[in-house]
Image (cartoon, rainbow, N blue to C red; front, side, top):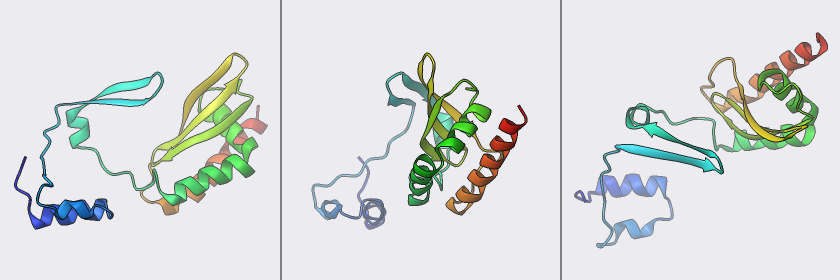
Length: 154
């Protein structure tokens, strides 16, 4: 435990707006010194993250935001053929028959593809990392156009 200060309580409440209990006398604050991180992203998706990677990581300004959610929903609903084209062209799965965007972050798209032999998750990487959610739409438009051109040239 570390000393609970007004500043720490204020920061905690900024991140957790409904945490009125942070001001209670029995609410304690702790400082964690990260030594190891085990990432578990679902069945078969796990790895160790070195503490140095964690310490030097940055908050992703895109992932988890409403703009990312809206882009994923829009692409999966209205542009399934384009999602499939991107997966075939850039996720290394040219034999995919269907593709769905599962996630979007500053570096690219996580896709789930249907292949003749089953399902496979893969990644479509953006040409450059996104610095804000304002870049999502144009980046996906550009990637879609390039995937279409690549498909038509085959």
